[in-house]
Length: 172
Image (cartoon, rainbow, N blue to C red; front, side, top):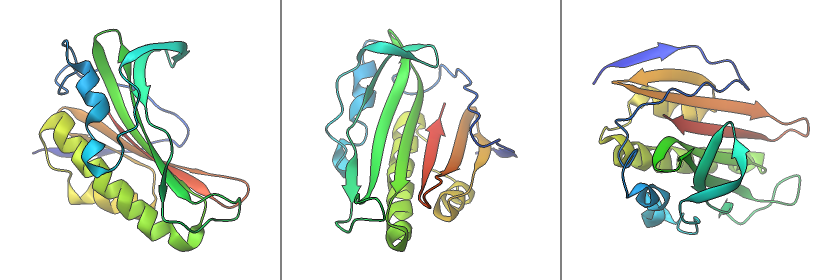
């Protein structure tokens, strides 16, 4: 497995279309919505046309926010994670997991949860294991970009003015 590294500008998402993603272009794109059902993200909607265009993508599915732990943070919410799959009618373009860190004291647990789910997602979507360097970036909550074989992987951290933050794992 080849791993390349590139610098990612926070807040800028560039999507590379890679037709090799599992279920990227066939009648089973809806299965991508269920990739994480075994780890508790099973409330995704079915693959469908969106009521809005998200960065030009017309179809997708998404989960609700899944709580990580029970302790609320500064804003009255616990840490949580959500799963998104976006594309066009019969093609997945990218997968994304977003963890929201509302309780800073439990950020390690939430970031570990993101690593676990991202690794499962990567293996199901690409048939590849997640390299340790990517796991490390997620655990540190750092923005970064990688190319693994033909796949583009981004980790993006967005800090909030109130002290919390979110970390994205994007696979395209």
